[in-house]
View 1 (cartoon, one colour):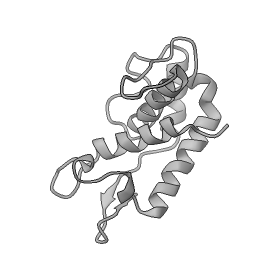
View 2 (spheres, rainbow, N blue to C red):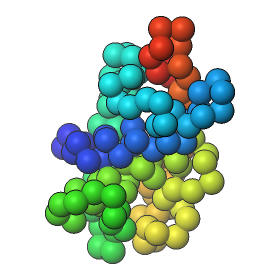
View 3 (cartoon, rainbow, N blue to C red):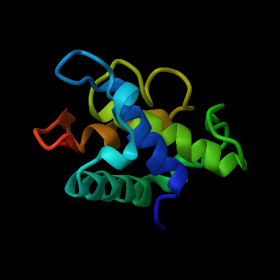
Length: 132
């Protein structure tokens, strides 16, 4: 099952919001998804698909949290929340699947799955594009 766009877009949004450029300014203040280098976007989307494919039943569990940042059906709002939490958890940002919004035992399983992807960092290259 391919990750829905709401999952991917929320993951990328969290990545831009929580990462800073060389001046310490959050990337989402000066950049958007169109500024991702092609290889960076491909890798981010591949990670999203791999995580979602392996964990979509946990993402869409009973009492899954819904983001207020996305309109639409509950499944899109659950997926968006999971995309956001996937980035935060895998990168150790101090919030994510484990912080109380997700029901157990799903929270623990999603947390472990996200951490298995390891930390990644974004940076702005000399070409002005965002790279991993």
